[in-house]
Image 1 (cartoon, rainbow, N blue to C red):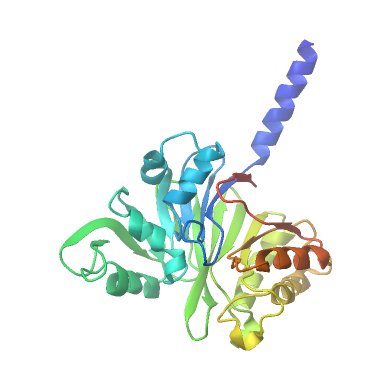
Image 2: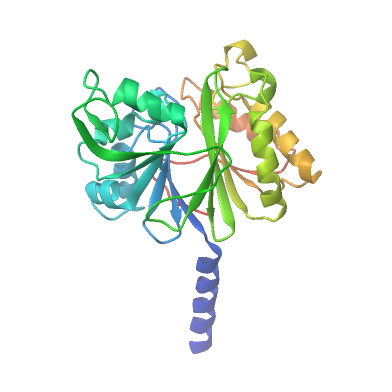
Length: 312
């Protein structure tokens, strides 16, 4: 009996040690449900120190996570203490409205973003006409709760109050509008998160190609734990009405480019979490069915559940 218990302890320790990241979706959709919009907490395994990848929904997602026993502390503790900062991929409301609405109750922390996103906060949201200025720049009175951190593409930066670092990449979204992606790094492992993006062919861009080139060595080394990427519409949506988003076919088109860098079969088993689905009619189920039925790359598609913890 003692030997069995020892083996169980060793097995559990081995499983725990294999986990690098925790990921908790606070919101998974790309519109249509204000209680469930794009926001994903990523943090070191078993640390309760997270970076929010976008912030469309915050409090409703925390509450859902508590209902699922992902978190056992009050909403205010998760909001103020667990979330150490925000990465905002672009300036659309479904990616940052939760941050704005919860700003009066939040604690002081950084907002990491490309300079054009910081300008949107300053000029459109944290203004006296639309809200109060919780940023540390812009219209007076300046409350200064959030510290704007302008990040530079392709340059690594430290995520404050965590052991993680990150690197930002530009994306095309309703060309010439911009969005961005983030590679989060910890102990030699990585997770990649993409804000809204169109396919390079449709957007007449090379932005995804640049990101794929950066991710390919991580895939080859098996250090990329997960790729979070959007699929907003079904394949029935005309390409001239995608408004800077992906369909299942366009996702596969882009993943084939990524596979080509390392060779056939190189994406097998890669965790690909599908984000930003637009919950109109049966659209979500159609997207899921299409991806699962035509998975010739043999990636591991994950369709996130709001509030559930994922370990990578």
